[in-house]
Length: 264
Image (cartoon, rainbow, N blue to C red):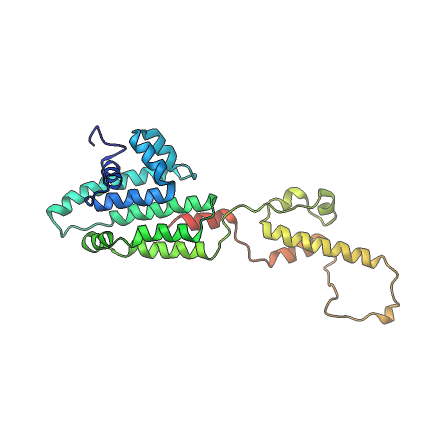
């Protein structure tokens, strides 16, 4: 790597092309443009002009990006520069390195979405720069083994964004420990449940407590009792009933959801 390079040759070339507004080095320029969509053009430009490599690294970790993701990005960028030189000598040589770099940027964008809910405009702007640059489309068809790989992966991830998938931790409202104890469990155990199970459990307990209050009122004669669709049937054990109600909920643990959302 050239000692005067900023971070590495790929990033240095891309920064010079993007901020110098040149038409050469189209792929490196393209990647810097996408980074600016994620982290802000002014912030990226500031660390580049200051030659602040530590500042650049900190900027890319703003949204909690995994260190391995950053290391893989630099590795693939270095490999791409070697591949580009090889491809210029022999155009029949192809690789999916360009797509791998773009997919890493998609993951970086999703890390941001976990902390800051994106607007439709932000999603569309990132998508346009990522996929609709004619020079990059042509480059993929000329040099990539799978020219449409980035687009296919983005479409899957974008659908999750558009479906309003819940990506943030939701803290449920808990009842007091004494109330849970009456139903054979404890606050400690309830806190291990998914928030949707907690909501259903709380609703069930509240409904049972309301029925108990109703049962304390004067009753009609047994002969007047009729079984209706609103009649509550119970196993006789409050905790068992609570688990039966909670067990019918289709739960998805939020850590697993985030893992599927970020990892390809």
